[in-house]
Each structure stands twice: as structure tokens, then as C-alpha cells.
Image (tube, rainbow, N blue to C red):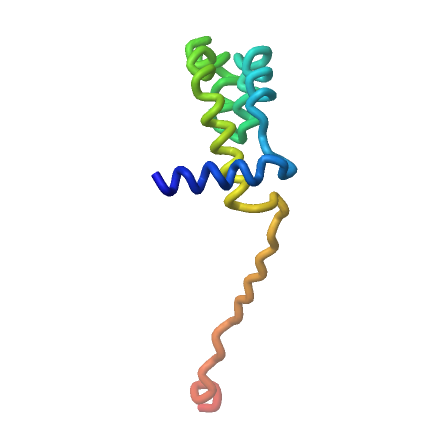
Length: 108
């Protein structure tokens, strides 16, 4: 219960943050373009978005079920954004060095 309250407060604090997803926009996309999965792409559900695109919303059944799932998908996308911070790419430098040859073996 405490975790849920903390996550809700986190989402409310970050409502104005750039990049947050809107349930209203997601529902408009679901209604007009939901059979081809555009609302799923909007919520960063890329794999299921491709499945919806290829099967026309799981032959319409998935599209109907999504009316109940859209709020959760938007909340999940917003929570992911809140936990990861900004969407800027982070560069990671990996330094790989070759092991030093055994000098005794070289001198023999």
C-alpha cells in the first residue's frame, strides 16, 4: 500500500514533465487508429503495436479489450519515464585492455 501511494505521488509530481503521456491522447488514438495499434506505439508498447498492426487489433477483439487497458499502459509508460528520468541517451565508455604478456616467457 505504501509503495502504491509513493508511486502515485511520484506520478502526480511529474505530471508537468515534458514527455509524459496523456490518457486523452491515448484514447483518441485508440478510437481512430486502434485497429492498427497506434495507441500502443504511443505508449511505447512496440512489440504488441506491431502485432496489432499485422492482425488489425487481434481481429478487433484486442481493440475492444484495450478500452480497459489504455489507462494502465499510459501509467506504465509515465512511470517508466519517471523512474528512468530524462530520455537522453547515456554514453557508456568501456575500456578493454589486452593482458600484459608474461615478461619471463619473452626473455627466455
